[in-house]
Image (tube, rainbow, N blue to C red):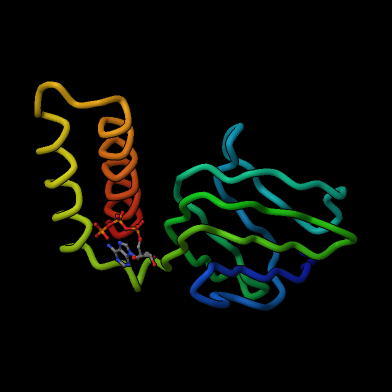
Length: 133
Ligand code: ATP
């Protein structure tokens, strides 16, 4: 299968650079896959599970939270707000974040902002736990 160059970065640094057969992630409008030959485009990322498939068929999974992805002249760049490879996810930390978010969401009288922040934190934790499974 044809490959294409991919770079994955976050504000913390470069997480991947190399040739891949496929990158699958969640954009703001739904799950998407990019293969070699994809037309030029750019979109914002949502929160979700992501994976790449290397030339030898190896599949690497990750939790991807926000950012943007572009494919320009055959080169794909994924700049995420946070990106954790499956092996780097700390499940205990995600469990604790999930519990804290659930505790907040159980409280009465939350402001809209407090509710949205806790809900987003819960979603991030659930994605990390799901990727880690
Ligand atoms: P926490 O309350 O545990 O910090 P969070 O969802 O608020 O969770 P983020 O703000 O999304 O955390 O991420 C902050 C940084 O910590 C990012 O660099 C992210 O990649 C990393 N990170 C967050 N949770 C985990 C985890 N469970 N395992 C590994 N890295 C994590």
